Length: 365
Image (cartoon, rainbow, N blue to C red):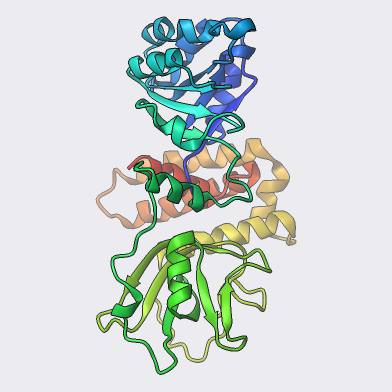
């Protein structure tokens, strides 16, 4: 769900290509591990200057001598034209601050925070981000809160209304309808009191008031099925909250994705949501791969292998081109459906999810 930066022991353009094609939004090249720094320029030419991040080792040498990497930063950046650089093993010195501030690039500091503080790092004007495992067990949002207290601008949650602005029931609670932020599926309904609301806004994790236990309830605290807040909305009467969340695992205690898994009444609406249909077809194809069914055309394709699947994708693509020349759209609709089906067979064969495609398309916006 989040763009990620990836690095590795990349010494060839092929290595960098594999990292980038894994889905990374940017690739870090650690200059300590490559024999030819010209690979950075080649990578910039191949992928773009905003896609490659060189990583400089800024560890001071013997007797506190400045590192070689630090002295080469300016000339190297001019040569490659990259827009972002990363530095590691930082010891904040006047020379480091001057070099980074003058580089004219966004700087990411990779730091264990054993000798530097978060505030010190962000005091360097050019530093736009910090890569660290420091927050593990210490609270990611606590670090952000401390930065805000020190006058640093960071992205934090902030609600536009106080709990006192809501119309609560006689127990001082407000109902919360919880919805999957990607497919709009309603997952569950729960209640919040003021403390749960404040905690939700503060931590980014959905927190409720359990009416049965009469206590605070962080969803997923025992099961691991956390709900991460994407947005909170209030209805026109200020008496119901709509929460759109990233759901980890199942929302329902029964193990079902949604608490609303049982139909009471269905009017047989024939309208189809394209996302639901594609998802259902993909799930069926994936199930055929795991649980073969005798006489299944899908299993016939899997049995024949990748060459047969690719041949069918090519044939269907050609048939789309031919059908598009006809004035009647009926045939092209049929051929497009065929192509989408065979494409999903290929996706399952290659281990690609619909979500991978959705993320790629979303990133192109």
